[in-house]
Amino acid sequence: MPAASTEGAAVPGHMLIDDRFTAVAAKFFSMFRRKSQGGGALAVYLHGEPVLDIWAGWADGDRRWRADSMALSYSTGKGVAATVAHRLIERGVLELDAPVANYWPEFAVHGKGDITIRDVLDHRAGLQRIRDLVANPDDLLDHDAVAAAMAASAPDPMRLRASGYHGLTFGTLVAEIAQRATGQEFLELVRSELREPLGDNDFWFGVPEHQRHRLARLSPRLGVAKVPFDTLVAPFAALRAVNSARSAVYDGWADMTLGMRPYDAMMPGWNGVFTARALAAMYGAIANDGLIGHRRLLRPETTHRIAEMAPNSRYDYVLGAPPHFALGYHRAIVGTRLTRQALGHFGIGGSGGIANPRLGLGIAFITNHLGNHAMSLGDARLPTLAALTERAAHTPLSESPTDTLNNTRAAS
Image (spheres, rainbow, N blue to C red):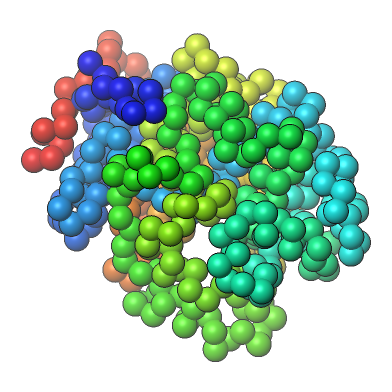
């Protein structure tokens, strides 16, 4: 029988492994054999029904990853924030091609009056700069202070030529627009627009104290070849391409996120905390005409618009690469390919979620072990698992899913 969490969400007492997905499960378990590999969870929905819900490894040095464990997942939260926006758009609370200033009048200064909701979702608002945005670094965790500073800022003129990844500011923009349009706090909107429709409470932007015992601790420090991120990019700051990327983060951000402080904040672009189960349900609905089981998250026309994934520019002036952003998501990497058939949002370090509407497939992977031994910024775990999952989805339907592994066996 599932156990009830303190917030009322059902937490399964046993893992779920559909017979078709045993190879996916085996690959996942192989990723967390040693304590040094940390832990994680993988969940999959196919045609609106759960077919995989598994977990393994360690949440901390002395704590196993459990059914209800969750982790800060960095930019994975951007797709979650975007889904809240799409719920509001389909009801007419927001209009996709309306100027942001229609809802947020102060935003119109410095030539921003023609920036639309679509521009924000497509990372073309030109407001990716976070470095030196506010005078007091402590205010970078204050949603109201960051939103006010962005409203008073001039946009990057490069926005007219290409997308510019809003690494730390995307969620603030989406949240503030949603708050202005509805008169409700964004955390309340997350509850009404995601938690209630999906029947899962584990979408967090700011984790309350009584839920923090479920958090998995992140490691190692973010960097490349053990060189900290800030140290790595600082010598190249004078180069225009690097300067754009460097302006989108601030010194100390990477190290700060390994501690507990971000859990106090509400920064939907980068401090979302989720279970794989909750995230897979959301992407499972996006992949299944908006339905998960008998619950409707989005209308079919909304999911079809999202699934078009028409890239809004050929390259990104912050990332220096073609991520193909569209409407708050990006094309997903599956195996070794950036594919048009899948969309979602990955987070730095390796967590993320994917929807493949062609296959009716929603996938989510959450981990506390950032990247691999060479680079903690990201790795191929989720793309590898996604490729195996897509292959398994083509397997003929078995008579029934197996639900045989329990927490005790997972911990052994």
